[in-house]
Length: 215
Image (cartoon, rainbow, N blue to C red; front, top):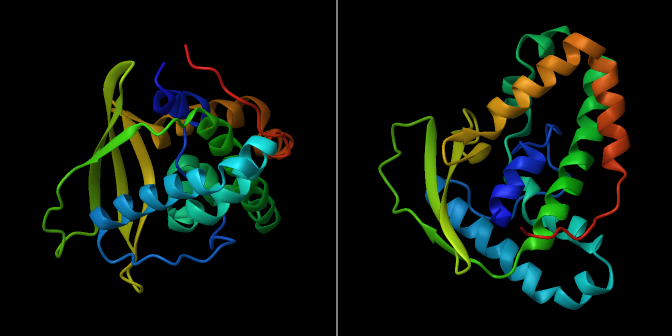
């Protein structure tokens, strides 16, 4: 599978559940189309700049992901969409703990997938008028010379007070990460309970980064 397809299969999410990212954003967030372009390019540039550090220790990818990608995710909104009715049932203690462990879980999963990054070409869609929109879908195409291109759509939401755009979902070939994770979590919660899910996420969040192999 293409590395970006593995991203969807492995993480099935485009969220962090921290209400505020641990690293503050530095890019302008008023244009959703430009934001996706800038975040992607800045992240890939960081991979290239830190190549020696990453080769010496794959866990350095966690640092890159947390600093370059995580600040631009609408964490609370995405979490609410994934958990749905279960979100309202969380106690304050459960919510606080879930926020912490899921943030780290997401960082680890993205770091694992980005071990597959090999400077694939990214083509970004042209911007559209979003002046009267509260949500936007930004499409990109990943070009891998060894495999067919894959179409990706990032969904973003505009903050009511800040006016800043942040991503809350990503879909590849029509498959939504939020929808996939919602189905998975709902089944686990019904069978095992929310505390089981939180415990599982906490365990996985402590994993080291491992090199992935494409097929």
